[in-house]
Length: 158
Image (cartoon, rainbow, N blue to C red):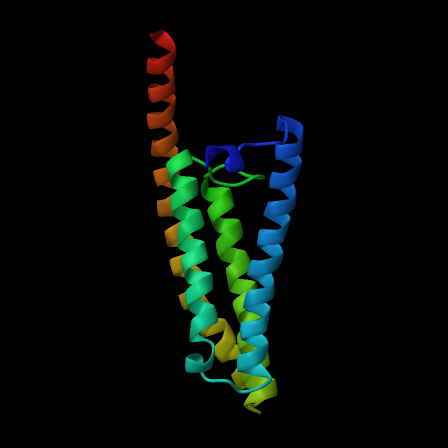
């Protein structure tokens, strides 16, 4: 049985395959999120209509968070820090304002000023927990990296 699961690619091919798989993963995640938004905003689907997609997206996100934590990984382009947490919180704030404004103004036909003010107010309650979660996660990653460095240092001393 082991004969069937033996690697037939070299390290370079494996790295290239991992890059392709990573891009494919992001395409799937963002496509799933967009499909859920379109179903809810355009086709007026209830949350019960997209709960299956939400559960799949949620399980995938938790899997990635746990896997990255175990390996001490944070991001390709930044390290854990206040600047990174603020960027992610700010991005969440802007995206949630846009999505809520579209929902209130276009879908539910609310007045322009009311839609904008409600969007800004409610987006704060999405962005603030996002910032707090990223700060807690980033600090946990920093501690995990220190623990992993000590582990690897101890193994190399043997």
